[in-house]
Length: 359
Length: 279
Image 1 (cartoon, each protein chain N blue to C red):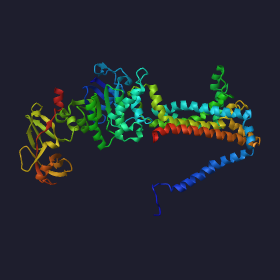
Image 2: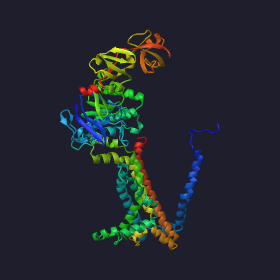
Image 3: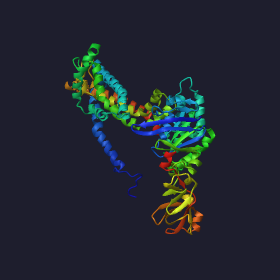
Image 4: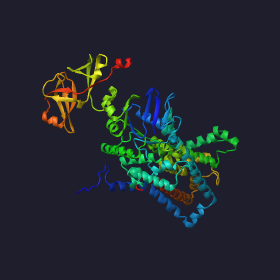
């Protein structure tokens, strides 16, 4: 079931958490709401769930075709998973999962045997079948979050909403759990929307990533799109490490730190100062001078990883980083103090304020 | 090895602390209570039975236990509301209200008794409103309940507050997202979570109410067989140099309240132990 929201705003006093957000969440896919804290992503999720009401004048919230904006959370049939699990501590795992079925009005409540079977099926699905009679305090963080997920799924929600579901877990468990969640989703294919501030998590788990900043959506697209083709400076900065240089655009060329390169993006932009974005892996090291390269000295080496991250500095004191493969690192005999010519293989410039207002 | 220790602790050894605890408890509580039992033994079993089954003693005990139970129940309900308001909402004057809760603790009980009698008397502010309705608040069992409710309130509020603060709002939201109505959320989620604390508060308020003397004697009027509470009866016996009679009533009170506290404790263990450890 797809989710569509239009023109959603939310203010807390003078603070505007959401500024007229419109969003479409595709059916049966995982979508990530990615952004720094305070970007409004959790607020948006809670408004979709019905845990929070949008400001007056906000548009509809549709599940498929049905507008649920006037419905209370109990009637929206959403599965909500909280960052800190929010399990019922005085109930066993079994009772937690069965809760949503047991609180149904009498004529809708399934029979005891049906509930039993359903809960056990769900516990099997989240691989906790042997834990039915334990209490939440006897489980690890990862297990608790899986109970929370089974509990949310028990009511057969139309959409699954997850608020930083791995946020409270340690790094290793978090990685395991997100692989597991991806596989689980491939099995049950429910429309899922999850909030995260971790870009790796969003890019790895989601089919679609929505990047938010300061109450607005910066970009929505597939993980490849937002990573390789960021629409704004914010997205470029937020997704992965990036070097930022002050430069200029003149005659369709980009100039920064003694280098001038032609770039298709620059051709249709106004002449003037700009910022140049280059990812560390888009830089190559050369021993001999080249016209499109800048001379720099190695000041730091971090070699413990699949690639080697070098910190470099120019004569003028410009500091940036470059990733090279372990092979290149060895063949060039890179050492601290070594001088190289650094060539940008690719770079990005974004329309300045002047260009944006003109459009 | 000179100091074979399993666990390091900041307090000196288990032996010393246990010894201290036992001696302290004995001096403060156990020995005086044992003396009570010894003293009442002078009556013999028959004499004891005869003393505690006189209509006056029975009526006093009935009133004491009954009024204490009613007062503790009232406090459990309304103390819950007060504690809920104080923990869940931020409003102007919250700290002041919070501080006022402790007033019944701090006030000398005789002062509370006089104050309560003054406002609930037929000429007092509240008594005047109750009089036309045919409700007699002073010199009646109702007066006893009023006084005991007053002094018991802080026990319930203060034991519930930490439990309610521990209760995350998210848990309620989770229940709502699963389709639970407010009433269901309260009955199935909130109440079981705070039940151990509520029972503790109830037990403390009850125990305090049972032993209360100062605030009650003014408002109750102390009519033998009608509004005379057991602690007052003990004092009356003492004033008549009937030490055996006084201790006999005391022993009865002690035994009954001990049994009740045991029951409440068991209830608490049952409701709290379920999510603490081991199913």
